[in-house]
Length: 348
Image (cartoon, rainbow, N blue to C red; front, top):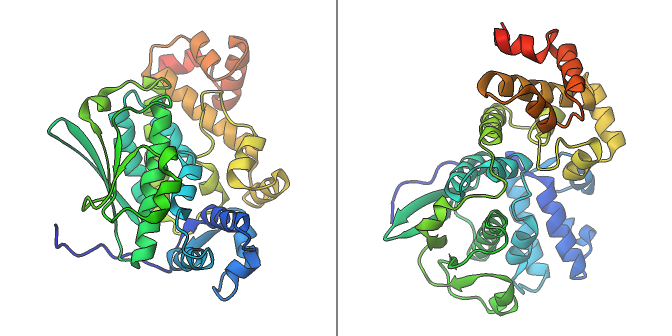
């Protein structure tokens, strides 16, 4: 085992999205523990938990988890429950980037890259040996043993649940390995999880290496490159900005999915925010939802025109325009040139 010192983690940095706390409070409420009792004495105001787009510090989140475990009678299973609810949907940009990749291996590698910024406490590493792929998950900080079990229960379960979707709901020969002994509460979740091994000395997801080359049904080479670029920009923005404002929060959500670009209702549901609140925040930022969406569509259109041989009709359909003429009109409004003119001149 490596003896290298752990990277420094700022426990007071506001880096944990408040949505995690809301899920914890929801699970505790289902167990008869009201949120007012959960928050009492933690220095976490209810108004902060209810604030759209807010973040908790790692220290605040840890104190909430420890209290949840204590008040639930240390029944365990909270990590499994949260992991099964989170799946791949926690960070829309990372999810869409992974869904657009061509193979499972590509998706996992990009998921690791994104998670190192969006979930700063965890570290992921993908290795291959003796015909097996091993996705190792570790933490950048020491935590109490009971919280460590919770954290790895949640991490392995959520990653497995998310990748299961990329496999089309059937993932053969996968195992979850846990470093600690089998807990009593595992029996209640045995049928909801894949094969699990305990006391393995590491926290890992293990599966045949041949599965890394499995094609993803939603994979698209053009979409994959667009999403990679978007995620790189989002990662850089996240590194440079400790407290995300509304534009930073929106950026990873304004991406084209399998059903096209999101509307305001879809985005608001991801942000746990009313449309009225979102409109007000955007107005304060000097912009509007449609203007931001049009800018994303403009950038996507220019990349497709510049870097692919797709026909203008195909690009128009991919972007959701019923008629190529409508796309031409919109593109000329965005850039001052028709798609054909812009492609000939490559924007110049």
